[in-house]
Structures are given as C-alpha cells and as structure tokens.
Image 1 (cartoon, helix red, strand yellow):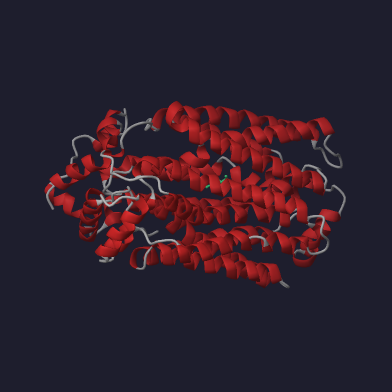
Image 2 (cartoon, rainbow, N blue to C red):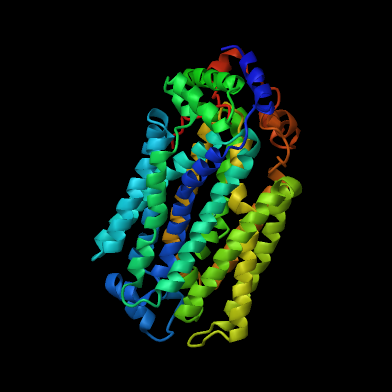
Length: 524
Ligand code: BGC
C-alpha cells in the first residue's frame, strides 16, 4: 500500500463534493436520530419511575418502607442494590450488545442494525409495561439495553455517512440533542403519569414505545448508506443511493472515494493493534479520559436520579418531578447553545468555563445540604430553590461542554488510520462508566451524604486541569491536518507523534476511513 494514498485521501477530505441537503436526507436523518431519542428516554425515565410509590410498593417493597419511615436517614432512603440494578442493567446489556452490533453493522449494514435495535426496544417496552414481577422488569431493561447497544453503534455512523460533509459536525451534535430531548420527554411524561394511580408508571415505561416504533418502522423505509453498500460489493446500488441522497447525478468523485476507502478498509488487518501504537497514544488517552471524565462530572446522578435526589432533599413528589422537568429543559437549551458556539468559542474555552461553573455549583449544593439538611429536618423553601438553581447551573454547563464534546472531540481527533476503532473505544468507555455511576450513585449518596457533591467537584477540578494542560484546541482544524497542526505543536503530545509519518510498511496496517470520516470496522 503506497503511503501516497493517504495524502491523496487527505486532500479529498478538504474538497467539497457536489450535493444539496435534500429533503430526503433530512427526513432520513430525523428517522434515524430517533435512536438518540430512545437512548435519552431510557436515561430519563427510570429516575421518575423509581420515585413513584405505586412502583416501589410493587417491585421494591423494602425501599418503599424505608421511604415511608420518618426522616431517619434521608440520604439512604433509596440505597438498594436491586433498585440500582433496574437502572444500571440497561447499560451493562448495552455494552455487551455493542460487540454484536459491530458485527451486524459491518456485515449486514446500518439499516438492519437499526431495525434490530428497534425490535429490541419494542420487546423491552412490552415487557416493562406489562411487568408483574422484578424479573420481567429487569429483563425488559436488558432488552432496552440491547437496543441502546445496537442503536448507538449504527445511528451515529449512519448519520455521518448519509450527511453531506459540510454539516457532518452539526449532525454529530444532533444525536446528542436528540438524547437530551428524549430525557426531557421522559421527565415530562413522569410528571404527568405520577398522578395516575396506581398504574401511571406503566404509562411512563410504555410511552417509550413511541420512539421505539419510530425507529423500527423508520428503519424499514430509510435507505442503506452508500458506504455500507459499496463495502458489501453492491456498487451499482451504492451509486444509485448516493445520487438520490445528494440530489444530483454528478456523484462520481464522492463515489470513487467511497470505493477507494472500501478497498483500503479491506486491507486493514489489525485496526485495534494500530490504535495501541505509540503515535496514536495522545488521541487514545484523550478519548478514554474524556469519556471517564464526562461520567465523573456526576451528570447522570442528575439525569438518572434527579427525582429521587430531589425527594431525598425533602421535596414532595410533585415538586421533585417538576424540578426534573426544569433541569431536562435546561439540558436541551444549553445543548442548542453548544451547537452555535462550539466552532466560534472553541472546545477548550467551553470545557474550561464549564469546569469552573460546575465546580462552583457543586460546592454550593454540597455546602447548602451540609448546613441545611440535618436529621429530621426539611430543607427551607429558600434553600430548596437555590439548590434547584444550582442544579440547573451545573446541568447547563455540562450540556454546552462535556455532553456534546465528549463525543465530538474523539470523532474529530483520530487520524484516518484509527478513526473507527477510536469511535468504538468511545462508545465502550462511555457505557462502562455510565454503568458504574448508575450502579454506585445511590449507595455513594448514602455513604458520602452531601459529600458526594464535593466528590464530583474534586473530579471536575481534575478534569479542568487536564483540559488546561493536555487538551489542545481542535476548532476549525481540518480533520486530516490534526497531526501536523495540533499534535505536533503540543508541549507533551509532540513527543509521541513527532517524526512518525507513515512508512509504506505501516500503511498496509493502517486504518482507513470512508469519505464521510468514519469507517465500518466498528467493534468494541
Ligand atoms: C452522556 C450521557 C448523559 C447525557 C445527558 C451524554 O453526552 O453520554 O451519559 O446522560 O449526555 O444529556
């Protein structure tokens, strides 16, 4: 494999291919992105449901009794492994499913993989809605998790491949935006169903059927990506689809690049071994750290458990659910702000500003709780309002920084030889640490009490220092010029990438990419 191929392809990345943003692309992307809605709905729904008395009484009577007891130890009301398992089983299942999803994505295409995801989601929703015992409930969550594993592998890939290059970045954040809309939708549903006694929780779990059906039916109507068709040898169909989605017959340059990318993809022997090479260390370290840090901001303590958390703080059921709606709405709005500011202010600026904002709000919450929530006491109304405000301050900072950037930065910093393998690592590390937080948070709240907020604040300061010294700015740098313009100028990372241009030998082992920036040999 001549090293030349890489530079030729590097130029092609910068070049614009002909093609409009056709209505077909827009509709297709909306349907596919319902995978993000589903992911968000699953994140947001469990907290509200697990705070509902009817649900607790039926499936977690021990927790229900503890909750009803006086304020003996507010922080430990919800400390129950089964309850945490209800939330976390989904992420463990998702992690395992990603391994299978990578196989179907590559060998059968993105569309069937999304269909499988949709079917898992529908199965999970049915089991959850009809649940008469804990087993059905957990099995339902596991099926939903399988759906998340399949959808999160295929949907972002699908969006990236179907999108014209110039709006690929915006579409990347669109997936995150859909996730936040899903979370908000779940919060609103929980607020409404809490009043429907005794089966409101069934409605909460059942309404997940809307995004689930949207994804399932949608995946029957959307096209397969040209990249996937070409990769599986269906060249003519690939070209026809490309014409359709670009709205022009002049697709030869893009098509030729797809064919070339696919040819090179077939020559890659060891994508993951490549990822471990010294020259790829900076991106690998950054990706893993970004995903771990993203979860250790403590965001999912809020997203999963906001209603439970607010009740722990002494809010009534109703107040805790509408407070969650407020935080959910802040999450959506701040994500939209991120879409518009990320290429203007830059990644570092957003992450550092948000780090300071998150640190301050967490410390204030910790102090207010430490002072205000003594045994057998309710929080004063004023303190409660300030706490909700501080939670919103925290969530907004996360949503315009670590939320989208935790996904965007890994997808834009890997060189083409490791881009896809890097993407897989991103998904895996995310699900592992989402699982860890889901499983551990309620126990940590019980042990650390208000100190949990200082714990997360400490992590936030570590990650902000990390950004300050170790994360270079990638704003407005063409993807294929990252190594030359970013890594080779960084005080530390240049030691890893300096003078290690690909030789002919290495190029055969290198990891290629598709025209749209992501290849398909995804595996976890
Ligand atoms: C994170 C999720 C989180 C969500 C909140 C995502 O970027 O990966 O774990 O729940 O943001 O909006």
